[in-house]
Amino acid sequence: MARESWSSRVGFVLAAVGSAVGLGNIWRFPWMTAENGGSAFLLVYLGIVVAVGVPGLLAEFVLGRRSRKSPVGALRDLSGSKHWGHVGLVSVLAGLVLLSFYSVVGGWILRYVGASATGAYFGTPGAYFDAISYGPAAAGYHVLFLGLTAGVVYGGVRGGIERATTIMMPVIVVVLVGLAAWVTGLPGAADAYGFYLSFDLAYVRANLLDILLSAAGQALFTLSVGAGTMLTYASYVGEDRSLPADATLVAVFNTAVGVLAGLVVFPLLFSTPNVDVATSGPGALFVGIATAFSTLPAGRLLAVGFFAVVALAALSSSISMLEIVVAYLVDERDLSRQRATAGVASVVLATGTVSAFSPTVFGFLAGTVVDVVLTTGLLAFVVFTAWVLGADAVDEFARGTRFSTGLGDAWRVLVGVVIPPFLVFTLFVGLGDVVGLSLSTWQVAIAAVAVAAVLVGVVVRTRRPFETPA
Ligand code: PHE
Image 1 (cartoon, rainbow, N blue to C red):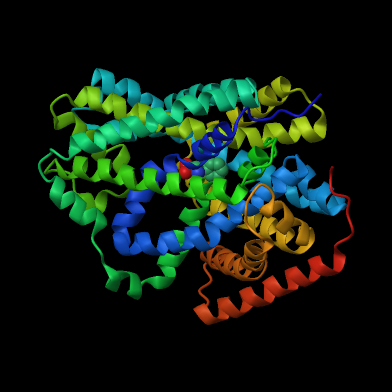
Image 2 (image 1 turned 120 degrees about the vertical axis):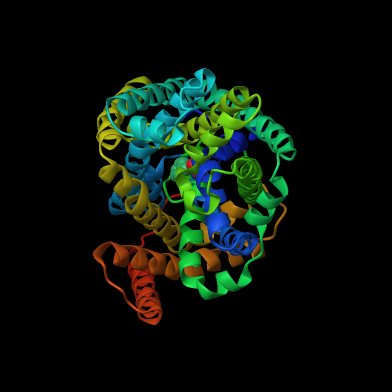
């Protein structure tokens, strides 16, 4: 059977933006910004998006379009080595891990859409969230969210994913812009903007290492980079068009939606005297925001709109997580899309239920595991791109663009030489945190460079000539 493909460039870009725009933007990004020095953090974050996120995204795009395969097949076919195929399995793992907690949060959000309509949490938002967040009801809503996700993926690349995301993305932007405009009129809006976008350079200077790490983790997560999602989506790109332009578009949209979400969230929180913005943290979406809605005129209507938009954003991302694993089964195990979707959904039904019952499992997957898996995945993709695919990667980068290969060569140096030590560094620090090791920055930096060099060395020695697919 012919491989599926997007019907248009817009379809591909919107699907990729849909993957990127998600809970990472609406739930996490405003908080990270506010807690880490406001717009000074935003600058650091943007720097990492430009220097690591976009080049990494491009590496995934290049691997996907070049191979027309999902990650396992892509790494195997482009290298001619089945061992590289095994490395690609990290993406299958990533898809499963991501969905196993994301679907639980998606379930909470669906529940809040309904609860906003009835005003169920209006009296006691905190107690309400505590009561519903883990347990049988949380598991039930997780299954509902997973069902919606599977329903879209079941419909195929064009008929399911592209169709759904091209409707969802404009709706998300329009409703968010509407909400952002509406909240400008709330009391305290000016204070809110001040808090959100304050420029605290001193804070950033004093905590640079921590901030670099959180900005790096956030940049990968929010751009959906390292999981093989973007590689898989790019494998459905039929014609030649500019991948650098598409990657830039995705990053620009994604950042804009993150900033926009903050312009909605903070004025809401500042509108109620009894919400302590500085300490409510990431739980704010469910507790702080819910409190705000409960006290505002037309609060129910606005709350339904807000949580519905969050649900759409979450869904357009969860689709892309499921697609990684489904594409693997379709490409490599010869399953039909329908059977593959049903199979993966059953597995996640079980694993997600575990995190719906256990805050410990949930926190572990959503925190450390996801960071480590995405960083490892991206490391594999960039090293492969620069050192195994090499000059062909630069060709693929330039295909469909008006660039000479000069820019592509610069990009290759970035992904092959600069980014790997940076990723190894964040990986070490992340893993060090888990085992309770506290190494000095210099020790970690030197080790990171050494490991990256060994990695590149091994790859260069073992790579073989390969046939590029016609
Ligand atoms: N980018 C998504 C978000 O911001 C999460 C995601 C990560 C999706 C990795 C796919 C792959 O919510």
